Image (cartoon, rainbow, N blue to C red; front, side, top):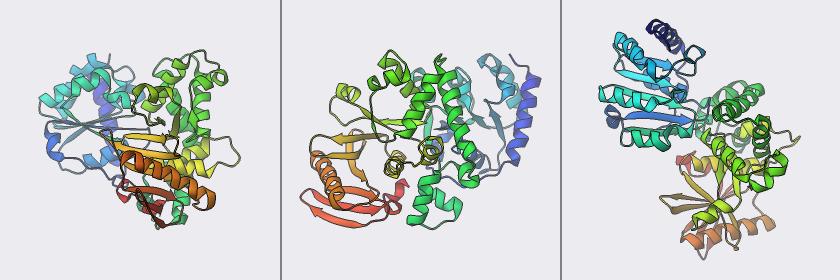
Length: 405
């Protein structure tokens, strides 16, 4: 339990820190501002990807009063929903009608407090580093009362804007190696990404879910980071992790995904059971993190490149599978509302037998889903093929689906 005086002191200290904070690079997000008069804006994404910076930018967009509180501060470790009445008092003293709550997922039952403030006429913006922020009962309680935005580390376009580099192969190769976490792009401090990786695993998975076998979860995370894009089966990991049940490994993977550290891509199938049974592929939230965390002396750039193409798609599509039905494998089929809209291959260098394999895979997906266009994304090549199914466009990464980059 916290006193009103303690809350007032923490809020004032955090307000001063927020006012000193740099606004940073404007992030490309689309929000219907009219809805935010009655709906909470919920920003989710991996730690340190820029959610707090986006919140700062929104704070400064208007001249109206604002109230800010970051809930993962050490001083607020004792805060719970029973303290909300005292928090109300501090908010009322501020005179602000815009409320900004950072890392609010640290408070159990936070959605009830947000609903209360919306009903009282406040505009509310919250952030959280966990996708479970809007799952289960919480999603039900906030249904029809929130606008949700996912934020990722810098896209390629944002990377160019932040660094001042020019579009082209040289900057793509640099982006592939550094990834998009703002601080790492700015400083190149490898310890930042290594510590961030460990922090996410420990705080957002091990501690959050009370996992006793910390070492096994760490080994799982390292294994996934060293093998992006490779087919992954929980059953095959049991011996390496020292775990008895595949369901335990599957649960850990779900929690790693909730923390936005990894994304798991199933094999496409019309059968929900088949999607669960077949091996999945894992991709990391940032290619720079792969390079720093891996123990490989030389990282496989083909795997990292495939990871980078996945992230470009994931910024636009939530439904992504890999396709393999005998006619050849296609790295990604991306869908909206269960309707496949894109078939995409990731290929660093396109030519020879490699070219025939990539074309066969994307054409198989085009035929299966009735697509007139397929994509092969490369490090720098550009070609176009007229095929029976339609057109296959071979494009360099910097020109692939600009709206998603």
